[in-house]
Length: 478
Image (cartoon, rainbow, N blue to C red; front, top):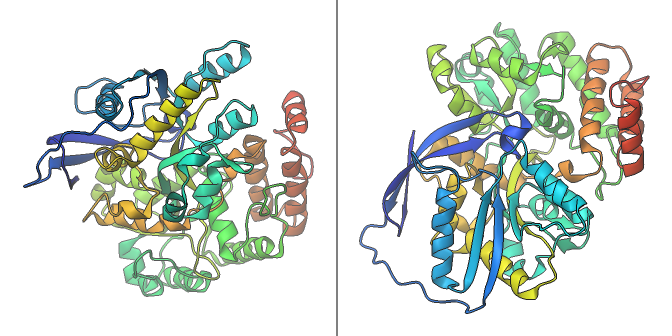
């Protein structure tokens, strides 16, 4: 697929890597390709960059390989061109670049944190989960001055703003993101009439009532259902979004101090899923993984899949074509038709170093990379995600597959991944699902047990104790 976008920049062709979730390969998600052509703006004259500041400083910028490189170029080549453009406006700020890998990079930063005199980077491009952990260590500078009223009002959702905060301060400046969605087999949806239950206006948001009617039509027409998989943590964000949205519930309370799967709304959703499963409208996937659900959908076996993203569409394009599967993407249904979606997010943090000149130079770099008209849109495209700023507009102009994801960005909800003990909670999550759909425990008992054990992970000492005793593998009644 070729996406064309005009900028006042030299013509180039790149291959954009679209990461399935924050953290890239470290998260076990596939990294996929999409051809993007960036062409120079016709009739536009290049203008010399004006010097913004004469501030003198030397800073380091560490980044994971989030930006796609031009064909044949090694990691960091594109970032070096950004530094060159930055220096046209800030000629006396020296930026030293280091590209981390997803496997060893987090440990490298943690090792420096453990050293009393560890030389931490000045600027880091990463995801909110790790950045939040660094903020809790007290090693990040606040970026409040970058979050002007104009910027705050321009960010597409409060959920993204909350992901950037630690307490009352902003510690991450967002660049791009992407929501997770579900998909239907177009032939089956059209053949059953389920397509008529879906919303085709704008962002395609729809209700649980309409979704239930679509499931009934698919089943009545003899098409195989999709599955609620829960054999492990991979792809669990999709099942959380699906379940909590059905009756407008939430995973946690508003201040993220307790889990709320025992709420009336969430219990209603789980009881409804049990009802659908008994009717055959949704399949028991307790022995299947997220990858199994995707594979079954791509092979044309299932009418819908709860786990979908643009990268999966691209990586499976050949198989989908061979199997005659045309994909229809929609957000997760919700009772009120206003979903709250989980998502991946890319952004920058600045480490506190006690040197005001270096701190200011670091803020200049972050602001330039995210907001300068010469590079900001291309940086979003090369990150394989979508703008978090409304004013940036449609960076994938004319590409339907991309536009639906852009349209859904305002529905980016609370970013739960940054809470203490999140990884331990994920184990309890799929155990709870399996217990309910296999009728090992009632919805009430399973959700009570989940909340009890998940809440323990929110306290650091309890989390570390659980790790030491193997508590994340077995939790008794849930």
